[in-house]
Length: 478
Image 1: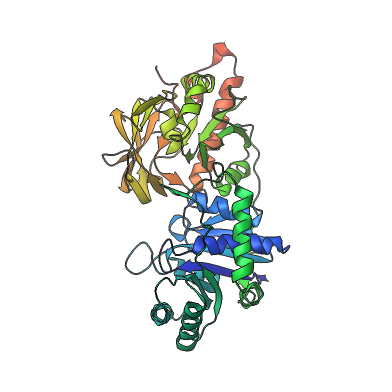
Image 2 (image 1 turned 90 degrees about the horizontal axis):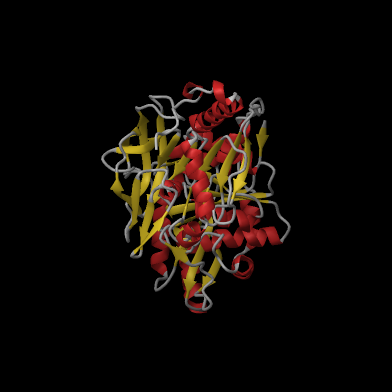
């Protein structure tokens, strides 16, 4: 079976060239026209994907061949986009920038993998004919990459636009499909140390997305872009593969709000596919845990919400008490920080849950940034020993106090907790700086659901008959 999905990959020569504005604008403008848009983000970034999902009106997915492998990445794209009128994929960094000098796992490699024409966004400030040389270089770098056209960003005026356009179209033989001027009202969305401001914190989402749509409508040739996006080869779909939802008597709570928003949609769906019910919990508003069998705390910005997290002492106490009682808890990055004794930021110390014997300090520079690889080499509630995990990390915090005495994994690439280790294990709690994607780490969902099932069965036993052996690790000895 084959499917012809109209698609474009929006790429740049480097970061901060305007590709995010163009990608958001395309999604929002096409949605405004009534098109069903499937947005994707190349790479592991949570925040850009959240913005793209809002602009498209449906959750965006991340496409990352390093985390998932090529076949899984391609299948994920097809599954996500096959019912859409068009898919818009936002690249990351420069078009050919990858994990090594050969450009492995680059946006260009992804474009070839899914057969997407590239819309190249070029920062044209203070240049004209030289832009043609840059575009031509991208064309010559890999003749297998197909270019739909170019968008010129930061154009200073009509003459600037005319000369740059003529140079590119004459020298490179591809059309200029958009000319975006310097925007006096800054259609850019404010940034933060992990990239864009999270959607939960931005004060005027509708206004920002409306502005992005206006920019696309006014300055891009949307009709021509739609036509070029449709000039693609069909993709083969394996119609014999069907996901079968398992059944499990287990409920997994997920802390999800402005403080903890770094969750891949596929991770939550993997928990459901493995049979679990997912129960959302608000870290700053809910004062008690619902009846759950495990807890998943993803990443986010607990430091910027630290005062409100401190104010919600009832939930912090409830989590600490549940951990002592043996509740399986899986935490990533921001979740690790929340489970620590305290977070130190901007000269203040904020008490957290105290589940982990750690003190976490925020810094001005990244303490871990990039892809990560771990080998699980010690007992823990979730992963079999010998499991190889591929993930990523991007954090400005580090452990400065306490001891990470029992850890689950040896770090082969990345920073982790330090000293070549990651995954602090305390009772039925495991906390990692490394984020994993369920499509690249299938053991994650099955392990978390299995731990929840064991705990659920243990809870149902009469108190007099309960033994620590009913769950993988004994409750922690506080």
